[in-house]
Image (cartoon, rainbow over all chains, first blue to last red; front, side, top):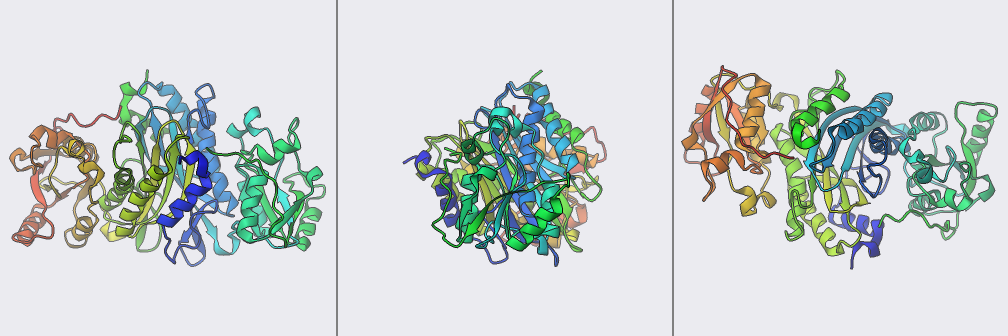
Length: 291
Length: 291
């Protein structure tokens, strides 16, 4: 049996089995970032993301954009927990004949988005490999009261997304997206979502993670799902790589958020459905399969 | 120009240029691990290591041993700073047709050495790639008074290594080595080395890092360098992947260490040379070139 049969989640289960977690880990494998002890008031967040040539990017793409994406994916994971990113270490695997400028521009793209979000790149590893591989491991911090995981969604919560979905890969948006740190911090400070994550594999598949971990179901108001120009509903549900926030709020808070944002331009959060008590009610998903 | 011309250190310089580091980072790029703010008494350590198929391992090797090595390299980095490892995140890139058992056994090898050194694997990323790539990012902690970096070597310090060198790749030892955490902790608690690192690229090349960062030179007592059976002096100097500790101690402490370990069996540290004031006095190195 090879891994295309068990898929990513089968592998994660295997890793969990071999990696039992001690009691001082607040959240281990299975959320956007691990939640670790830090101080009286704060948790440490820890996440890792790998991008591989010809799976996630090609050399015809702009090297700066590749670097941007590698760092922005990890920043998005920290945002999805309600936190702020702090320190990153970067590993790069490079074929012998990679042009130096290509590598410099990967760093440049990484450094630019890091600066924008106050991330310090504090270490790295550079190794030889057959194709380009980039790994960013990122730390963050979150006030204990602001932490949001995937597992807190409650029946009758409204489901929201932070922006338009669909067509991210085809349009190149997956290389230039801005991680939703400001939106996530606004939410945890003023509305405290019950559950939150970022959309990387596709709305349908990612919402199912929240449903499974929260032991609830969901109904989507399909017409209300905000789609990028030209994207079909199916694409909005399944394309992935949108890196928008997906979160749930109790109905009363949801109405307050709708009121708050009426007429405002800074952020807009789109209500797209409702959590149900029926845990069987999951979303039909053809989300991005990793293998 | 491609990267085989500038080499790993050229790339690290490029990364440093694009990644200026804020003042609350005690040590950034250029030591075995980054040293970050944590608590009143402790620093947080942060390191990353990537292993790529056909550069660092092949599929004919035991998958468990590959997993062991991937985690042990990072643990060795934390030990080299005087610290204890705590939490790891693991990214794995896998070709579509990788046998599931091979992946499980990589995890198993990783989990076993993690358990031995109280490391918790708290997260990961699994992606598609053309060849197998493994990245381990590891956190650790060190009491501020116990931190040792590469830059503190002083003239007249003795130079020590924690074990035999040479032939690690040819013998397969690079896949089974035990990171020198216990030795490093003993040293920082009772002898506080002036400088320390682990030997990954080869004694000669790695000692030069200490010399350059400490602005000193060195004389090696070549006959005293402990070599694995069958390894020549040249191999002991240049093979690399030994993952032994390399450290310097003021002469008085060095003599005290020699006295302490006379007749003891637990650890043995081998004196192999002396630091000199002449910063030109570097070690001729044909160390492992990454590209």
